[in-house]
Image (cartoon, rainbow, N blue to C red; front, side, top):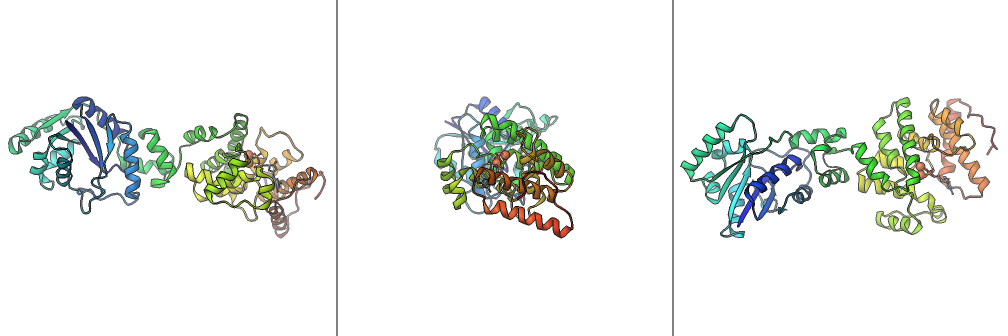
Length: 403
Ligand code: DGI
Ligand code: FE
Ligand code: FE
């Protein structure tokens, strides 16, 4: 039996790790490949923004799923103190008596192995497998292999493979910029986004694909329109365009769920529907959408709030909340309704005036339909009407029936 052992910080595990492990599996045909995240790497401190070890373990398990015979092992996470390879190999020797243990490492690790804790134990318990990772260092590796063989009786396998050109450090720096997805497996990327690890924000192409899958096909055009309008408004008002796009992409993500599913979601997320929402479950998608977006797509508070308030509005909204509320109401594919053009124009001239007008229009519409008015909708209108008064600005004249 042969056990391939791949240790590392896996912070996060990336396609370079997966590719290296696959190449090693092809070359060495092990029976099992263990990916072992280090609890406390002896040679370097974990980065400051390192997530809790359970998260690193879960990501490593997802990455291991991409490797034939791959498994994540918590052997080092369960031990206290520095994660010395010699200790790990001793434990694995007991767990797999008689097996050949092969320890997979990078070039630089092979060249410095003599400075490790108990190097003779490491090389006595395991064979070493190394990638000729840095091009041009093949000579150094060959010389080191001979030296280790002579001095320690080490068995060294030198593997051919593409150099790994990406580092976890670089990926961590890219994730908050909505970048880096191409260096991660789909499962690991979704996990990082969902749990907001490393301050990651979703790549918007990725998010669109995922969010559209939650929509009725007939609603996709509306959400595309809302994103385009939210971007234009964000540009106009100096708000973050990507944040506006993210909120718009997600704003109706639970809209298609029926009453029973809405209520199930409320239960799951600890939302207590009020009596207006119980009467008219169409109102619930704002609350459930915000909770779902935060849970599944890692939406941070300010994005979740824009989703939360997109249907009724609320007094004293942030610019982002106003932008998403108005983009939803005036996006280009909206079926025409009275005052649509006027609200759209106003949204580019004065956000507060557009809020007042849009809320007023909704109140008129609801009254005509004989629909109950949610108090948040009424409060939104009252707040923006007063705000305009305080500014000394007149509300936009609209010839529809006044409220
Ligand atoms: O989800 P969308 O259709 O894109 O847009 P939305 O989230 O703004 O929902 C609009 C619906 O919500 C529309 O049919 C009117 C309704 N609505 C908005 N405010 C209230 C309301 N319904 C009631 N009963 N009471 C409200 O205060
Ligand atoms: Fe909506
Ligand atoms: Fe909408």
